[in-house]
Image 1: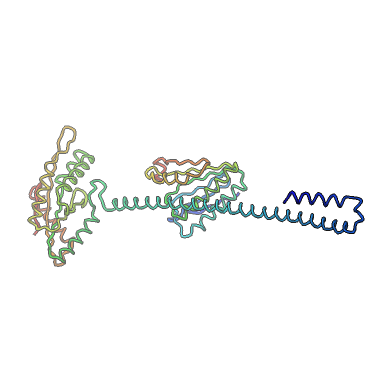
Image 2 (image 1 turned 90 degrees about the vertical axis):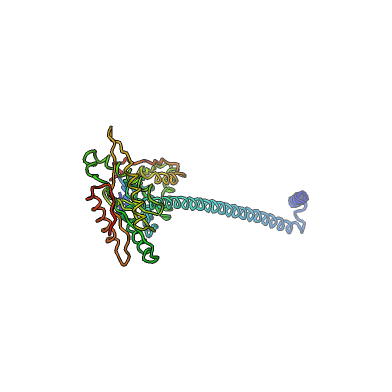
Length: 131
Length: 263
């Protein structure tokens, strides 16, 4: 068991890895000073989970703005999931967005494009998005 | 050639195997030569096989490198595409934010921020070029009575309609905005007080033609206005607005639906 949590800031998303539940959630904007440093930890956690946990992994994403290096990092993480999927491991992504900003959904579609595992793009209901 | 070789090899094998020739002095030497020849042939075949294996390995490696390069390239293109879209989204959000920060959401007229900016710019222009400009403060008459009597929805409609007419009736380079509540400000560049007086009279005339329907009732709207011309000589914009306000107050005292020029 190894949980992992990074509090969010104005320029970095809140990140929570829950080993027991098999969920990794990321929420907020992402334009960190050093995205390699930030996402390396996420990448390693996902890599280790897929290798050791033997349980399904779900990414819960509520990301708004991503800078270029964060986009690259997200694609690397999705590549990891794609590989795991090819190895027969159950993985999934739920990308939630505020329906007032449809563009976020369009961008999530771009990320989804090359993924063959379950990848849902879900509108948050307005009550939840207001919180 | 290979057939000759084959024949030669057959001949040598036969000669070496012939018991009658076993004691021949050349038999031993030929046997040794034959043995070395076979060895060399084997070694050459082995070298060829290894060399082929290396070649195919290098080729595989090249293929996988090319594949990886292609994949990286595709990923890079995708990153750039997504990044462009994020930037586009930010730009649109910026425009929306700017609009929200400078405009009144109800009437879509300019709010105080651009009004004050414009006032300062006109003051500078006026000081520099000696051109005169005026401001007009307008206030919807008995607005509280409309709001209280018919509800806020009707009050909002009156504000929206008044704003619409005002914007349509001023000149292209005039700026009108919502100063607050039921109060509006019009900035009239390149205008004397007499000209501004005419323009505001026309605007007020058009507003008084407005008919706002509330159920069976038809509401008429009138506005009062106070006008002031920029004095120059270091007059501040708040002093200018105060004079317009005082004139507006005078117009209200005169029984409303009228306009007054500030001294």
